[in-house]
Amino acid sequence: MITSPPHWRQEAPKLLKLATPILVGQLAQIGLGVTDTIMAGRYSAQDLAAIAIGQSIWLPIFMFFLGLSTACTTLVAHHTGANNQSGIKHTVQQTMWLLTGLLPLGIFAVLQGDLAFSAMGIDASVSNISGHYLAYLAMGFPAIACYLALRSFSEGMGATRPIMLVNLLGLLVNIPLNYIFIYGKAGMPAMGAVGCGLASAIVMWVQLLAVLLVVTRLPLLKSIRVFSQWQAPQWPLIRSLLNLGLPVALSVMAEVALFSAVALILAHLGANVVAGHQIALSISGITFMMPLSLGIAMTIQSGQYLGAKQTDAARYVCRMGVLGGILIALLSMTLLITAREYISGIYTNDPEIQRIAMSLLLFAGVFQIPDAIQVCASSALRGFLDTRVPMLIMLFAYWMVSLPLGWSLTHGIGDIEAIGAKGMWVGLVCGLSVAAALQGWRLHWKLSR
Image (cartoon, rainbow, N blue to C red; front, side):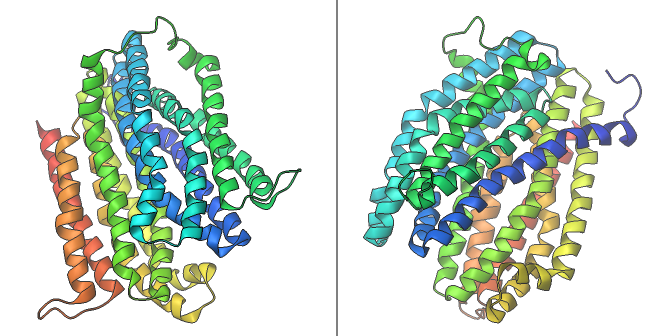
Protein backbone atom coordinates (compact mmCIF):
# COMPACT_ATOMS: atom_id res chain seq x y z
CA MET A 1 0.00 0.00 0.00
CA ILE A 2 1.21 3.52 -0.84
CA THR A 3 0.91 5.85 2.14
CA SER A 4 2.86 8.78 0.64
CA PRO A 5 2.72 10.44 -2.78
CA PRO A 6 4.18 8.14 -5.45
CA HIS A 7 7.72 8.84 -6.55
CA TRP A 8 9.74 7.54 -9.47
CA ARG A 9 12.37 6.09 -7.14
CA GLN A 10 9.76 3.71 -5.75
CA GLU A 11 7.72 3.12 -8.90
CA ALA A 12 10.46 2.79 -11.54
CA PRO A 13 12.08 -0.29 -9.92
CA LYS A 14 8.66 -1.94 -9.64
CA LEU A 15 7.98 -1.39 -13.34
CA LEU A 16 11.44 -2.62 -14.31
CA LYS A 17 11.01 -5.72 -12.14
CA LEU A 18 7.82 -6.53 -14.05
CA ALA A 19 8.99 -5.44 -17.50
CA THR A 20 12.45 -7.06 -17.67
CA PRO A 21 11.25 -10.70 -17.48
CA ILE A 22 8.47 -9.84 -19.94
CA LEU A 23 11.06 -8.47 -22.37
CA VAL A 24 13.27 -11.56 -22.09
CA GLY A 25 10.22 -13.80 -22.52
CA GLN A 26 9.08 -11.85 -25.59
CA LEU A 27 12.54 -12.15 -27.14
CA ALA A 28 12.49 -15.88 -26.45
CA GLN A 29 9.12 -16.09 -28.21
CA ILE A 30 10.58 -14.26 -31.21
CA GLY A 31 13.53 -16.64 -31.02
CA LEU A 32 11.18 -19.54 -31.76
CA GLY A 33 10.31 -18.00 -35.12
CA VAL A 34 13.91 -17.07 -35.84
CA THR A 35 15.22 -20.59 -35.19
CA ASP A 36 12.42 -22.07 -37.31
CA THR A 37 13.31 -19.75 -40.19
CA ILE A 38 17.07 -20.32 -39.99
CA MET A 39 16.93 -24.10 -39.59
CA ALA A 40 14.26 -24.65 -42.26
CA GLY A 41 16.07 -22.24 -44.59
CA ARG A 42 19.21 -24.35 -44.33
CA TYR A 43 17.18 -27.42 -45.34
CA SER A 44 15.80 -25.90 -48.56
CA ALA A 45 14.46 -22.65 -49.97
CA GLN A 46 11.16 -24.40 -50.69
CA ASP A 47 10.72 -25.34 -47.03
CA LEU A 48 11.60 -21.82 -45.93
CA ALA A 49 8.91 -20.45 -48.27
CA ALA A 50 6.44 -23.02 -46.91
CA ILE A 51 7.01 -21.84 -43.33
CA ALA A 52 6.67 -18.18 -44.34
CA ILE A 53 3.38 -18.89 -46.09
CA GLY A 54 2.11 -21.08 -43.26
CA GLN A 55 2.93 -18.39 -40.70
CA SER A 56 0.77 -15.93 -42.68
CA ILE A 57 -2.20 -18.15 -41.71
CA TRP A 58 -1.08 -19.17 -38.22
CA LEU A 59 0.15 -15.85 -36.86
CA PRO A 60 -3.09 -13.79 -37.15
CA ILE A 61 -5.09 -16.60 -35.51
CA PHE A 62 -2.56 -16.99 -32.70
CA MET A 63 -2.45 -13.22 -32.16
CA PHE A 64 -6.26 -13.13 -31.93
CA PHE A 65 -6.17 -15.62 -29.04
CA LEU A 66 -3.28 -13.73 -27.46
CA GLY A 67 -5.25 -10.48 -27.67
CA LEU A 68 -8.28 -12.08 -26.01
CA SER A 69 -6.12 -13.38 -23.17
CA THR A 70 -4.99 -9.83 -22.25
CA ALA A 71 -8.42 -9.27 -20.72
CA CYS A 72 -7.56 -11.92 -18.15
CA THR A 73 -4.26 -10.18 -17.33
CA THR A 74 -6.03 -6.86 -16.74
CA LEU A 75 -8.89 -8.21 -14.63
CA VAL A 76 -6.57 -10.42 -12.58
CA ALA A 77 -4.40 -7.36 -11.89
CA HIS A 78 -7.47 -5.45 -10.63
CA HIS A 79 -8.55 -8.37 -8.42
CA THR A 80 -4.98 -8.72 -7.12
CA GLY A 81 -4.95 -5.08 -6.07
CA ALA A 82 -8.31 -5.54 -4.36
CA ASN A 83 -7.07 -8.79 -2.71
CA ASN A 84 -10.06 -10.58 -4.25
CA GLN A 85 -8.85 -14.17 -4.56
CA SER A 86 -12.19 -15.58 -5.65
CA GLY A 87 -12.37 -12.94 -8.39
CA ILE A 88 -8.94 -14.02 -9.64
CA LYS A 89 -9.93 -17.69 -9.66
CA HIS A 90 -13.22 -17.15 -11.46
CA THR A 91 -11.61 -14.84 -14.04
CA VAL A 92 -9.00 -17.46 -14.93
CA GLN A 93 -11.55 -20.26 -15.09
CA GLN A 94 -13.86 -18.27 -17.38
CA THR A 95 -10.91 -17.28 -19.57
CA MET A 96 -10.12 -20.96 -20.05
CA TRP A 97 -13.76 -21.62 -20.95
CA LEU A 98 -13.66 -18.75 -23.44
CA LEU A 99 -10.40 -19.71 -25.15
CA THR A 100 -11.12 -23.45 -25.25
CA GLY A 101 -14.65 -22.72 -26.48
CA LEU A 102 -13.17 -20.86 -29.43
CA LEU A 103 -10.65 -23.64 -30.13
CA PRO A 104 -12.74 -25.42 -32.79
CA LEU A 105 -12.98 -22.18 -34.80
CA GLY A 106 -9.25 -21.56 -34.43
CA ILE A 107 -8.29 -25.08 -35.47
CA PHE A 108 -10.76 -24.99 -38.37
CA ALA A 109 -9.27 -21.69 -39.59
CA VAL A 110 -5.72 -23.07 -39.38
CA LEU A 111 -6.70 -26.16 -41.36
CA GLN A 112 -8.20 -24.06 -44.15
CA GLY A 113 -4.71 -23.05 -45.26
CA ASP A 114 -4.94 -25.23 -48.38
CA LEU A 115 -7.96 -23.26 -49.63
CA ALA A 116 -6.19 -19.95 -48.97
CA PHE A 117 -3.04 -21.14 -50.75
CA SER A 118 -5.05 -22.29 -53.74
CA ALA A 119 -6.84 -18.96 -53.95
CA MET A 120 -3.51 -17.14 -53.81
CA GLY A 121 -2.12 -19.23 -56.67
CA ILE A 122 0.80 -20.56 -54.62
CA ASP A 123 2.89 -23.36 -56.13
CA ALA A 124 1.33 -26.75 -55.30
CA SER A 125 4.53 -28.27 -53.91
CA VAL A 126 5.04 -25.37 -51.49
CA SER A 127 1.37 -25.21 -50.46
CA ASN A 128 1.38 -28.97 -49.78
CA ILE A 129 4.30 -28.57 -47.35
CA SER A 130 2.61 -25.57 -45.73
CA GLY A 131 -0.64 -27.52 -45.33
CA HIS A 132 1.10 -30.34 -43.46
CA TYR A 133 3.06 -27.80 -41.41
CA LEU A 134 -0.21 -26.13 -40.33
CA ALA A 135 -1.81 -29.51 -39.56
CA TYR A 136 0.92 -30.20 -36.98
CA LEU A 137 0.60 -26.69 -35.53
CA ALA A 138 -3.13 -27.34 -35.07
CA MET A 139 -2.24 -30.29 -32.82
CA GLY A 140 -0.65 -27.84 -30.40
CA PHE A 141 -3.53 -25.34 -30.45
CA PRO A 142 -5.38 -26.77 -27.39
CA ALA A 143 -2.17 -26.47 -25.36
CA ILE A 144 -1.45 -22.91 -26.44
CA ALA A 145 -5.01 -21.77 -25.59
CA CYS A 146 -4.75 -23.12 -22.03
CA TYR A 147 -1.20 -21.81 -21.74
CA LEU A 148 -2.29 -18.26 -22.65
CA ALA A 149 -4.96 -18.27 -19.92
CA LEU A 150 -2.53 -19.46 -17.25
CA ARG A 151 0.20 -17.10 -18.44
CA SER A 152 -2.23 -14.19 -18.11
CA PHE A 153 -3.08 -15.37 -14.60
CA SER A 154 0.59 -15.38 -13.57
CA GLU A 155 1.42 -12.04 -15.18
CA GLY A 156 -1.71 -10.36 -13.82
CA MET A 157 -0.57 -11.23 -10.30
CA GLY A 158 2.85 -9.76 -11.06
CA ALA A 159 4.68 -13.09 -11.41
CA THR A 160 6.37 -12.34 -14.73
CA ARG A 161 9.69 -14.09 -14.10
CA PRO A 162 8.25 -17.66 -14.14
CA ILE A 163 6.67 -16.99 -17.55
CA MET A 164 10.03 -15.77 -18.82
CA LEU A 165 11.58 -19.07 -17.74
CA VAL A 166 8.79 -21.03 -19.45
CA ASN A 167 9.37 -19.14 -22.70
CA LEU A 168 13.12 -19.74 -22.47
CA LEU A 169 12.42 -23.44 -21.87
CA GLY A 170 10.31 -23.49 -25.03
CA LEU A 171 13.16 -21.99 -27.03
CA LEU A 172 15.69 -24.46 -25.62
CA VAL A 173 13.42 -27.42 -26.42
CA ASN A 174 12.56 -26.12 -29.89
CA ILE A 175 16.15 -26.09 -31.21
CA PRO A 176 16.99 -29.81 -30.70
CA LEU A 177 13.50 -30.90 -31.78
CA ASN A 178 13.86 -28.87 -34.98
CA TYR A 179 17.23 -30.51 -35.58
CA ILE A 180 15.78 -33.99 -35.13
CA PHE A 181 12.60 -33.57 -37.18
CA ILE A 182 13.78 -31.21 -39.92
CA TYR A 183 17.01 -33.02 -40.78
CA GLY A 184 16.03 -36.55 -39.79
CA LYS A 185 18.18 -37.36 -36.75
CA ALA A 186 17.83 -39.86 -33.87
CA GLY A 187 16.20 -42.39 -36.20
CA MET A 188 13.53 -39.97 -37.45
CA PRO A 189 12.89 -39.33 -41.16
CA ALA A 190 13.87 -35.90 -42.54
CA MET A 191 10.63 -33.90 -42.61
CA GLY A 192 11.82 -30.38 -43.50
CA ALA A 193 9.33 -27.65 -42.69
CA VAL A 194 6.72 -30.25 -41.71
CA GLY A 195 9.06 -31.40 -38.94
CA CYS A 196 9.30 -27.80 -37.82
CA GLY A 197 5.52 -27.80 -37.32
CA LEU A 198 5.72 -31.02 -35.29
CA ALA A 199 8.48 -29.55 -33.12
CA SER A 200 6.41 -26.40 -32.52
CA ALA A 201 3.37 -28.46 -31.48
CA ILE A 202 5.46 -30.41 -28.95
CA VAL A 203 6.91 -27.15 -27.60
CA MET A 204 3.37 -25.84 -27.02
CA TRP A 205 2.52 -28.86 -24.87
CA VAL A 206 5.85 -28.60 -23.02
CA GLN A 207 5.12 -24.95 -22.22
CA LEU A 208 1.64 -25.85 -20.97
CA LEU A 209 3.07 -28.51 -18.64
CA ALA A 210 5.67 -26.04 -17.40
CA VAL A 211 3.14 -23.32 -16.66
CA LEU A 212 0.93 -25.87 -14.87
CA LEU A 213 3.88 -26.59 -12.58
CA VAL A 214 4.28 -22.85 -12.01
CA VAL A 215 0.65 -22.21 -11.00
CA THR A 216 0.50 -25.29 -8.76
CA ARG A 217 3.94 -24.90 -7.12
CA LEU A 218 4.70 -21.18 -6.85
CA PRO A 219 3.33 -20.08 -3.42
CA LEU A 220 1.84 -16.81 -4.71
CA LEU A 221 -0.15 -18.59 -7.43
CA LYS A 222 -0.75 -21.82 -5.54
CA SER A 223 -2.62 -19.88 -2.84
CA ILE A 224 -5.38 -19.03 -5.35
CA ARG A 225 -6.11 -22.75 -5.97
CA VAL A 226 -7.27 -21.86 -9.43
CA PHE A 227 -8.44 -25.40 -10.31
CA SER A 228 -10.55 -25.89 -7.17
CA GLN A 229 -14.32 -25.27 -7.06
CA TRP A 230 -14.43 -25.18 -10.83
CA GLN A 231 -17.30 -23.10 -12.20
CA ALA A 232 -19.43 -23.83 -15.23
CA PRO A 233 -19.34 -21.13 -17.94
CA GLN A 234 -20.68 -17.83 -16.56
CA TRP A 235 -21.90 -15.65 -19.41
CA PRO A 236 -21.72 -12.26 -17.57
CA LEU A 237 -18.01 -12.74 -16.83
CA ILE A 238 -17.28 -14.19 -20.28
CA ARG A 239 -19.05 -11.18 -21.79
CA SER A 240 -16.84 -8.87 -19.70
CA LEU A 241 -13.76 -10.72 -20.96
CA LEU A 242 -14.98 -10.35 -24.54
CA ASN A 243 -15.81 -6.65 -24.11
CA LEU A 244 -12.31 -6.04 -22.80
CA GLY A 245 -10.27 -8.51 -24.86
CA LEU A 246 -11.98 -8.53 -28.25
CA PRO A 247 -10.97 -4.94 -29.14
CA VAL A 248 -7.36 -5.80 -28.27
CA ALA A 249 -7.54 -8.98 -30.37
CA LEU A 250 -8.95 -7.08 -33.34
CA SER A 251 -6.30 -4.35 -32.98
CA VAL A 252 -3.51 -6.93 -33.00
CA MET A 253 -4.99 -8.68 -36.03
CA ALA A 254 -5.32 -5.35 -37.83
CA GLU A 255 -1.65 -4.64 -37.20
CA VAL A 256 -0.57 -8.08 -38.47
CA ALA A 257 -2.79 -7.65 -41.53
CA LEU A 258 -1.32 -4.19 -42.18
CA PHE A 259 2.24 -5.46 -42.36
CA SER A 260 1.13 -8.37 -44.53
CA ALA A 261 -0.48 -5.84 -46.88
CA VAL A 262 2.69 -3.74 -46.90
CA ALA A 263 4.74 -6.77 -47.99
CA LEU A 264 2.27 -7.43 -50.83
CA ILE A 265 2.34 -3.78 -51.94
CA LEU A 266 6.14 -3.81 -52.12
CA ALA A 267 6.38 -7.24 -53.78
CA HIS A 268 6.18 -5.85 -57.34
CA LEU A 269 9.24 -3.64 -56.70
CA GLY A 270 11.51 -6.69 -56.78
CA ALA A 271 13.21 -9.16 -54.47
CA ASN A 272 15.91 -6.72 -53.36
CA VAL A 273 13.36 -4.16 -52.16
CA VAL A 274 11.38 -6.83 -50.32
CA ALA A 275 14.57 -8.12 -48.69
CA GLY A 276 15.63 -4.62 -47.60
CA HIS A 277 12.14 -3.98 -46.24
CA GLN A 278 12.21 -7.27 -44.33
CA ILE A 279 15.52 -6.37 -42.70
CA ALA A 280 14.19 -3.00 -41.49
CA LEU A 281 10.96 -4.62 -40.33
CA SER A 282 12.82 -7.38 -38.47
CA ILE A 283 14.96 -4.89 -36.56
CA SER A 284 11.91 -2.76 -35.77
CA GLY A 285 10.15 -5.83 -34.40
CA ILE A 286 13.02 -6.46 -32.00
CA THR A 287 13.25 -2.87 -30.75
CA PHE A 288 9.45 -2.76 -30.39
CA MET A 289 9.68 -5.45 -27.71
CA MET A 290 11.12 -2.92 -25.24
CA PRO A 291 8.21 -0.42 -25.15
CA LEU A 292 5.75 -3.30 -25.53
CA SER A 293 7.16 -5.03 -22.44
CA LEU A 294 7.05 -1.75 -20.54
CA GLY A 295 3.45 -1.31 -21.67
CA ILE A 296 2.42 -4.75 -20.39
CA ALA A 297 4.08 -3.93 -17.07
CA MET A 298 2.12 -0.64 -16.98
CA THR A 299 -1.15 -2.54 -17.53
CA ILE A 300 -0.35 -4.87 -14.63
CA GLN A 301 0.91 -2.21 -12.22
CA SER A 302 -1.81 0.36 -12.91
CA GLY A 303 -4.46 -2.37 -12.78
CA GLN A 304 -3.29 -3.51 -9.37
CA TYR A 305 -3.29 0.07 -8.05
CA LEU A 306 -6.77 0.70 -9.44
CA GLY A 307 -8.00 -2.52 -7.84
CA ALA A 308 -6.60 -1.25 -4.54
CA LYS A 309 -8.36 2.12 -5.11
CA GLN A 310 -5.01 3.92 -5.33
CA THR A 311 -5.87 6.03 -8.36
CA ASP A 312 -3.13 8.62 -7.79
CA ALA A 313 -0.50 5.87 -7.92
CA ALA A 314 -2.10 4.42 -11.06
CA ARG A 315 -2.02 7.83 -12.76
CA TYR A 316 1.61 8.31 -11.77
CA VAL A 317 2.64 4.90 -13.13
CA CYS A 318 0.95 5.65 -16.46
CA ARG A 319 2.61 9.03 -16.90
CA MET A 320 6.00 7.71 -15.80
CA GLY A 321 5.64 4.70 -18.11
CA VAL A 322 4.93 6.84 -21.18
CA LEU A 323 7.96 9.02 -20.42
CA GLY A 324 10.05 5.89 -19.95
CA GLY A 325 8.83 4.57 -23.30
CA ILE A 326 9.90 7.82 -24.99
CA LEU A 327 13.38 7.55 -23.44
CA ILE A 328 13.70 3.96 -24.65
CA ALA A 329 12.56 5.05 -28.11
CA LEU A 330 15.14 7.82 -28.24
CA LEU A 331 17.88 5.28 -27.51
CA SER A 332 16.52 2.89 -30.15
CA MET A 333 16.24 5.69 -32.70
CA THR A 334 19.82 6.77 -32.09
CA LEU A 335 21.07 3.20 -32.44
CA LEU A 336 19.14 2.49 -35.65
CA ILE A 337 20.20 5.71 -37.35
CA THR A 338 23.87 5.72 -36.35
CA ALA A 339 24.51 1.97 -36.72
CA ARG A 340 22.27 1.23 -39.70
CA GLU A 341 25.21 0.25 -41.93
CA TYR A 342 26.50 -2.26 -39.40
CA ILE A 343 22.99 -3.60 -38.69
CA SER A 344 22.15 -4.16 -42.35
CA GLY A 345 25.54 -5.83 -42.82
CA ILE A 346 24.60 -8.47 -40.25
CA TYR A 347 21.68 -9.56 -42.42
CA THR A 348 23.20 -9.43 -45.89
CA ASN A 349 26.41 -9.04 -47.89
CA ASP A 350 24.55 -7.86 -50.98
CA PRO A 351 25.44 -4.15 -51.44
CA GLU A 352 22.12 -3.30 -53.15
CA ILE A 353 19.99 -4.90 -50.44
CA GLN A 354 22.19 -3.27 -47.82
CA ARG A 355 21.71 0.16 -49.43
CA ILE A 356 17.92 -0.27 -49.45
CA ALA A 357 17.86 -1.52 -45.86
CA MET A 358 19.98 1.41 -44.69
CA SER A 359 17.60 3.93 -46.27
CA LEU A 360 14.56 2.26 -44.68
CA LEU A 361 16.24 1.98 -41.27
CA LEU A 362 16.21 5.80 -41.17
CA PHE A 363 12.40 5.69 -41.23
CA ALA A 364 12.40 2.78 -38.78
CA GLY A 365 14.43 4.96 -36.42
CA VAL A 366 12.03 7.88 -36.73
CA PHE A 367 8.92 5.85 -35.97
CA GLN A 368 10.41 4.46 -32.74
CA ILE A 369 9.06 7.48 -30.82
CA PRO A 370 5.43 7.51 -32.01
CA ASP A 371 5.34 3.71 -31.81
CA ALA A 372 6.51 3.77 -28.18
CA ILE A 373 3.99 6.46 -27.26
CA GLN A 374 1.05 4.66 -28.81
CA VAL A 375 1.87 1.24 -27.31
CA CYS A 376 2.53 2.64 -23.82
CA ALA A 377 -0.59 4.86 -23.91
CA SER A 378 -2.85 2.05 -25.14
CA SER A 379 -1.39 -0.31 -22.51
CA ALA A 380 -2.07 2.25 -19.79
CA LEU A 381 -5.63 2.64 -21.04
CA ARG A 382 -6.02 -1.14 -20.87
CA GLY A 383 -5.23 -0.91 -17.17
CA PHE A 384 -8.21 1.46 -16.91
CA LEU A 385 -10.36 -1.16 -18.74
CA ASP A 386 -10.52 1.14 -21.79
CA THR A 387 -9.98 -0.86 -25.01
CA ARG A 388 -12.73 0.04 -27.49
CA VAL A 389 -11.68 3.58 -28.31
CA PRO A 390 -7.99 2.62 -28.53
CA MET A 391 -9.02 -0.09 -31.01
CA LEU A 392 -10.88 2.44 -33.17
CA ILE A 393 -7.86 4.75 -33.04
CA MET A 394 -5.53 1.98 -34.23
CA LEU A 395 -7.89 0.90 -37.02
CA PHE A 396 -8.12 4.51 -38.22
CA ALA A 397 -4.37 5.10 -38.01
CA TYR A 398 -3.44 1.84 -39.74
CA TRP A 399 -6.08 1.52 -42.42
CA MET A 400 -7.19 5.10 -43.04
CA VAL A 401 -3.79 6.81 -42.77
CA SER A 402 -0.83 4.43 -43.08
CA LEU A 403 -2.03 2.17 -45.85
CA PRO A 404 -3.62 4.65 -48.29
CA LEU A 405 -0.88 7.24 -47.77
CA GLY A 406 1.87 4.64 -48.11
CA TRP A 407 0.29 3.12 -51.22
CA SER A 408 -0.07 6.56 -52.82
CA LEU A 409 3.55 7.51 -52.14
CA THR A 410 4.85 4.11 -53.22
CA HIS A 411 3.05 4.08 -56.57
CA GLY A 412 2.41 7.78 -57.16
CA ILE A 413 -1.07 9.15 -57.82
CA GLY A 414 -1.83 12.27 -59.85
CA ASP A 415 0.81 14.87 -59.03
CA ILE A 416 2.31 12.69 -56.27
CA GLU A 417 5.67 11.31 -57.36
CA ALA A 418 6.26 7.62 -56.74
CA ILE A 419 9.12 7.13 -54.29
CA GLY A 420 9.03 3.33 -53.96
CA ALA A 421 9.47 1.50 -50.67
CA LYS A 422 10.26 4.74 -48.82
CA GLY A 423 6.68 5.84 -49.50
CA MET A 424 5.30 2.89 -47.56
CA TRP A 425 7.52 3.70 -44.60
CA VAL A 426 6.49 7.36 -44.71
CA GLY A 427 2.91 6.10 -44.48
CA LEU A 428 3.82 3.96 -41.47
CA VAL A 429 5.51 6.89 -39.71
CA CYS A 430 2.52 9.17 -40.35
CA GLY A 431 -0.02 6.57 -39.25
CA LEU A 432 1.86 5.81 -36.05
CA SER A 433 2.21 9.53 -35.35
CA VAL A 434 -1.57 9.93 -35.64
CA ALA A 435 -2.06 6.92 -33.36
CA ALA A 436 0.41 8.33 -30.83
CA ALA A 437 -1.32 11.71 -30.77
CA LEU A 438 -4.82 10.24 -30.39
CA GLN A 439 -3.86 7.56 -27.86
CA GLY A 440 -1.89 10.15 -25.89
CA TRP A 441 -4.87 12.50 -25.89
CA ARG A 442 -7.19 9.65 -24.83
CA LEU A 443 -4.89 8.75 -21.94
CA HIS A 444 -4.56 12.39 -20.84
CA TRP A 445 -8.36 12.69 -20.85
CA LYS A 446 -8.72 9.45 -18.89
CA LEU A 447 -6.16 10.45 -16.28
CA SER A 448 -7.75 13.87 -15.86
CA ARG A 449 -11.18 12.50 -15.03
